[in-house]
Structure formats: C-alpha cells, structure tokens
Amino acid sequence: VILVADRGPAAYLHGALALDGPDPATAVPGDDVVPSGSSALDLVVEDFESGTAGAPLDPVWRRRSDDPTGTASVVPVAPEGLAGRLASGAGGSSTSVCRSPGVVSGDMTVDVDVLLEGPAAGGALLTSVRGDEEVARVRAGANGRISWWQGATQTQSEQTVAPGQWYRLTTTVHVATKTWDFILSDRARGSIVLQAVGVPWRDATGATVDSVCLGSPEGAGAALLLDNFRVQR
Image (cartoon, rainbow, N blue to C red):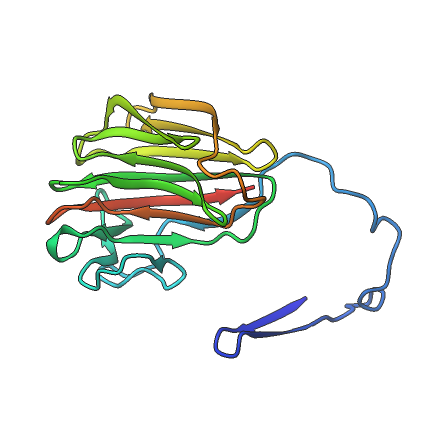
C-alpha cells in the first residue's frame, strides 16, 4: 500500500499493487478473522536522536504557547544523546507543545522521561492527555510538589520532584471507564515515587482522546527536558 499526504491542500493519494496476489480489495479467506494477542501497538516513538542539537523540535510537536520568545528545541544530554527542551520565554511565560497519536477510543498509555531545569516560579506540565477537553494531567508545582486532576478537583500531594533529576512518568487513560492511572518513577533507581489508579477524568464528556501535551515551568530561565516519549494503545 502506498499513501502520500500533502499538508498544503490537505489531500492525500493512495495506490496498491497486487504483487501476484488477488486484486486490491478482493476478499480472501481469513479476512474476517480478528488477530489474536494483546501486545501493545506503538503510535508514537520519539527519542530525539534523529534531531540536530540546537535545532527546533520537529513541527509534529505543535506549539501551544502564545509567547513567541519561548523555545522548543533539541539539546545534547549526558552521557551522550539528545533530548527535547521546552524553555520559558520573556517574563517567564510557559512554553508547551502537543503531539497527536491519532484518535484513540480504547486504552492509551503515554511514557515520557522528564527533568526540571533551573529555577521555577510556576508549575511544569509533565503530561496532559486531551480529547475534546483535557481528561488527565500531572503537574509539578513551583515547589516541585506533584498535583493531578481527580475529576474536577485538583489533588495536591506532598511528594516532590527535584530539579536536575530524571523521572519516568507513565500515564494510561481508559476511554471505556473514563478513568486514568499514572506512575511516577525515579529513572536512575527505578523506584516508584508516586502513583494513582482509577482516577476519574477531569472532563468525561468526550468519547476519544487524540493528543498529549507537555509544558515548561513558568519562571525566567526555567525549562523542561523530555526524552524517550512513547504513546501506545
């Protein structure tokens, strides 16, 4: 199957070759059989290694910030490698980006490594999952304390994350039950820092989810590093 898309006119073309099989669209025995197995399907995999240090993030990461002075770029990280960096702009305004894995109507899991860099006067958006509205969010406050939405109520924990340290955040949303889970781990030690299961969606009116967003802290010189971003269903 060949699929070609053009963002300009918002159109696409497709074609198929039989390759010595039946003509395209011809039903064959087994077409109605649903594949077995429960392995996860990768929708987005991004380790930033194909980028160039100092270059802006790929345009597939959509900017949500109205502050033109903030940056979303690729930076080198130790020991050797690249990561994404969302830096606050003039006046300390947050810079955020979103990545769309497509429309998902079942379970969707988001994994991302995050690191807070520099001083922060406000919170960093570690992961936000959205459909028509936001359904799940994990945030690090100005003092590093983790908070999340439990339905329409924001829950503030006593657990903090330290600047300059990598953490692994796994967020899973369940469309059928309108609930979500998250696990925050210390990446170096592999130990769980904080977790919650069966949290009700912040907005339960939607029937699908279709984007994941992250954002830098608010504060001059503050930034959020992100790496090993993966979305699965």
